Length: 349
Ligand SMILES: O=C(COP(=O)(O)O)[C@@H](O)[C@H](O)[C@H](O)COP(=O)(O)O
Ligand SMILES: [Mg+2]
Ligand SMILES: [Mg+2]
Image (cartoon, rainbow, N blue to C red; front, side, top):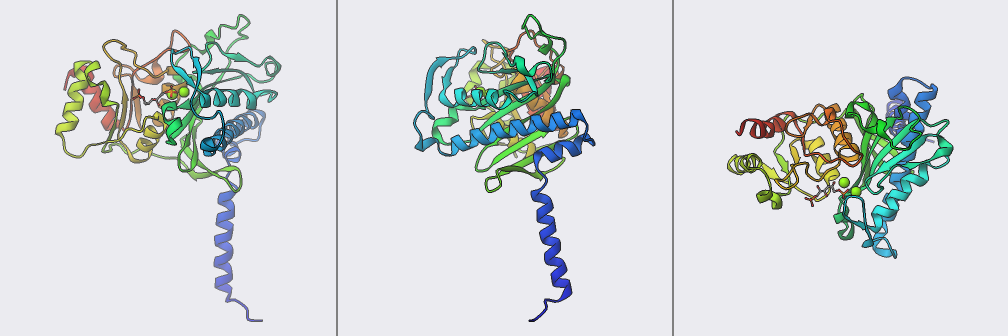
């Protein structure tokens, strides 16, 4: 039998080892590495992230077969607390997050876009002290046309016992988030998260059923060519926002990208730079997006990657909400591009 040269053997083994190491860098292992500990808190956070990942896998599985199944596409017939028509996928994804945390001993309360008040899991409460805030499906208008969608999550420590079930301890600024991130349901399913120590992305490997590390410590470019905004709202904005858009139109080097799902638009900006805007309108100065489970978690991610997020006047992470479903305007992305928009809002140029 002919022996392979020693050097060839070595390089094959090295390559195999590298790919094995990569395949074993799962989300739960990564969280433990981030915490530099195998202690109880690290184990809990790793388990929480693992459950969020399970929710992402369940939602991704349903979306991948949506056109073949009854009752997945279309509207449920309900109107949610935001006054928006609810889609069947909104209902399913909302229930998925509740189901994965039941009997988990991890999360005591869940608050979402689709529920007027938080959902309490009393059996978890003596143990789990976390609250999960989430947008189960972001960009739901894309559901019926097989386009990208997202889920957004934010984890907070419960303060106090919340005996009266008003959840008033959630009405604090975004710096109180322990972890935040999103799942992007695109050509592949990705999970991006931060725990205050950089931003990391994972791709779902369907053959393993695991989220595997794609990129660690992602840094957003300081400037990018993309501006991402619904220009259909042009005449509803304040003049300063219209002036900014006129500036973009007059200036070389900008390109518009808008998918209808904020998670995918902001993911593009995280990777390639630029700015996403959802400003308030003259009629609705607070805009459309909700602070606790949309703008604050995305602000945490983008700031951790070296970018910025503001209402135009105040950093998103400094905003203290008065109510659970409070809305804020959002300008988020590369530092230079956000500063440019701010200068139009604050100085008119
Ligand atoms: O948060 C969003 C919508 O939230 P939702 O789907 O209701 O969770 C965004 O993804 C927007 O849908 C998106 O930016 C498009 O908004 P419009 O330009 O259609 O208002
Ligand atoms: Mg949303
Ligand atoms: Mg939603």
